[in-house]
Length: 138
Image (cartoon, rainbow, N blue to C red; front, side, top):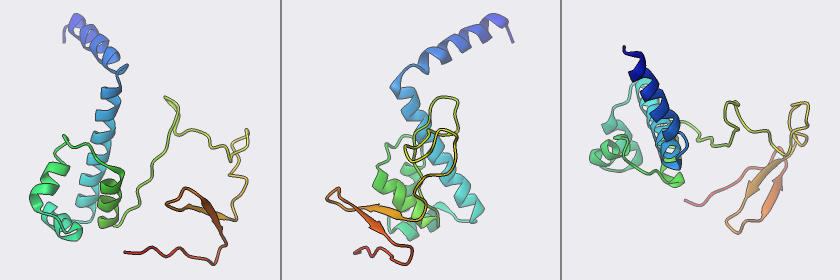
């Protein structure tokens, strides 16, 4: 490959990485690829996923076509239909993840590992003991 072409492509790519749109598209691609990986892992077809989600196969095709702007609700529904959990988080560029406020500076585990926290629709938090379970209305 011509070195000028490589430099030109690298320059264009680095410039695009400065835009929010680039990172939005990367997140869509990453989620879509993970859905396709899970379908393959579970030997499921798009039709199987559509049935589990109670949607049309055309909706699944649109969903994994790469041009969809997923809502968190849709992402959770897809994940649960594939027997997975959706995990979202923030991280600094180049890091595996951002450090939580609950972590100490020496990267030890979170300080409060015994209690579980859940957030209600009102935004108030409730601590649960180890034996308590949340019940969600369908």
